[in-house]
Image (cartoon, rainbow, N blue to C red; front, side):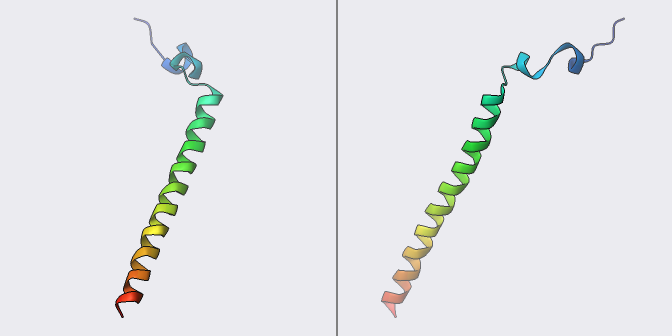
Length: 55
């Protein structure tokens, strides 16, 4: 019975993963995090200004 080691038989390119895919994945995670922060900041400013107007 042969021992099957996927790390030896297959490399990262066999799964369709390239350096470009990895870089785009990292950049998209950073961009989504930044966008979430900007949206959260705008919502926080809206509620802060709304509370100042109510006082």
